[in-house]
Length: 151
Length: 151
DNA sequence: GAAGAAAGTTAGCCTAGGCTAACTTTTCGT
DNA sequence: ACGAAAAGTTAGCCTAGGCTAACTTTCTTC
Image (cartoon, rainbow over all chains, first blue to last red; front, side, top):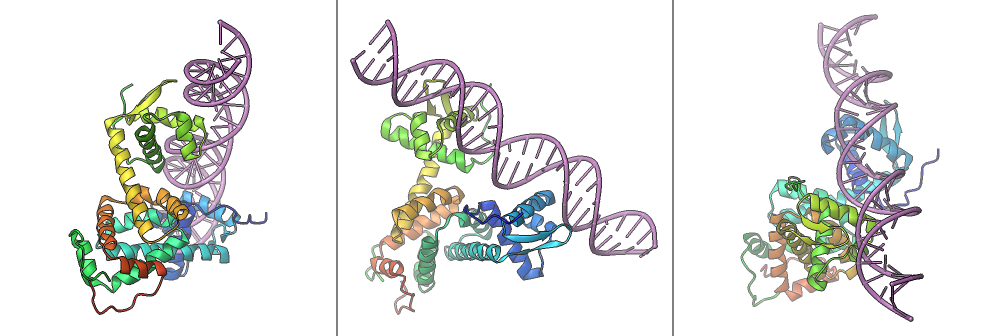
């Protein structure tokens, strides 16, 4: 059974799995079913099912009772979603939002951000970091006034 | 069969339906199954099924072959998602993104934005609109430099 | 009013992604 | 080495939300 080439865009669920698998591999060296299940707040059975599917799709290599490793394709996808996750987290932190709000929002938003939007938010975040006074105004919710110096 | 009170958060699909129904009612005075199906790029049968479910959930009143109207609860939800949609569209336009990118991204992101995040982006957008030079820098992708005047 | 087209509905089906329970394998502690 | 606990797997099931095909109703045109 040759793995199917990944023709369709990865679903949000697939992205969530890959993201957590990469994170576990980076922090622990391996990704166990029980850990993935814990991080995603789902059952171990669901993880096993999805892991088998991701193997069939060529995104990881899985061996029953023996674990899994990401393929190159899987790792690339995982890196991509991880970058989006970090970028959005960074951005919302800059806006002064609370960690639980950030976690909830990023978790959903990250699956819907195009590469162009990623670049735009990178640029925006970079510029905002250089303007602490502007950030203070934004965070305080004080309405913007017409500033004399618009740069 | 009394309508169930809306206990769970509305799903993305429900939000999409309500959003389009409100938009059609506002522009045409009514929302037909065929129009909803066209806007959401799905079959008429799917619309009928979902509309019946939304009636059961108390978000609209539906009469077979005769159409539908939003309830107060349904309209409130629809207004909320519409506001989120408009805000995110405004924000991404400010960043200079293309309409098709904006449409794609907003369509997915709008379901995952908390009220706090809405307020933060409102504030950010308001401030950005007052700073055309900053916007030009962001849109051009020029790296941010340490500005002398940080406001 | 009749016929055809368009809109709308019902019935049965599918997939994605989740669940529980029962079972299997591995790990851990003695 | 053994037994229990933990981890992992399989089997069967569910829901949400979509599909097609067949059917029903409404609208349009003559």
